[in-house]
Image 1: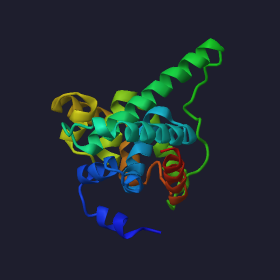
Image 2: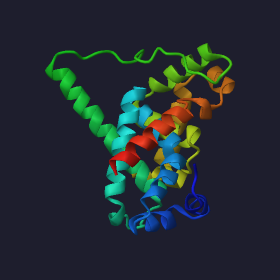
Image 3: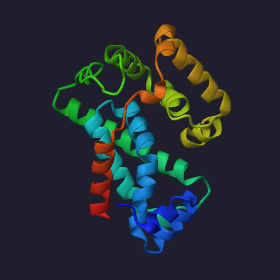
Image 4: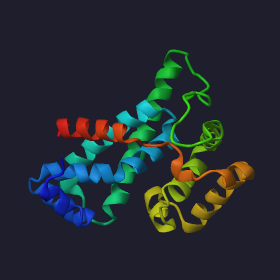
Length: 212
């Protein structure tokens, strides 16, 4: 049940909410998580390609972000700051996973790792084909595609998060689209990829709130 305090906080900016959390209103952190869960999941998935691992990474990123809230200096927006944290956690997880696989000589081809049909789209088969096509993009192109097309982040925000220039953002997005089959791009709404359902949202929020 949403408290009156949480309801009021929803009308405030992220930065104002952060200030209240730092002052002791820990329960308001849930508002920020629910606001950015979908973005965090999609961006982590674009790097990791494993929904349960992406969920674990999100939880770690949220906990780390909470512990570092007092260090948030407002040089960038809270959304940008939080997105950088989940990207860093995802890349770190990916490196560690690759090292483990190399150590045990169990390097696997992960292109078809996720075979479970996603729900909430009438044509699930075609949705899976498009999602797999997105996951085959090289990471630097895939990240820009997810941020700009799926998350509808602005060019400036994408530049800031990835620390690249405007021309690089545009080139990578154009290249990503070229790599994807045009006919598939026309058939789907990219916002429906990597669905972040309410049950997963609740699971992440409850886990993090218990930990902090």
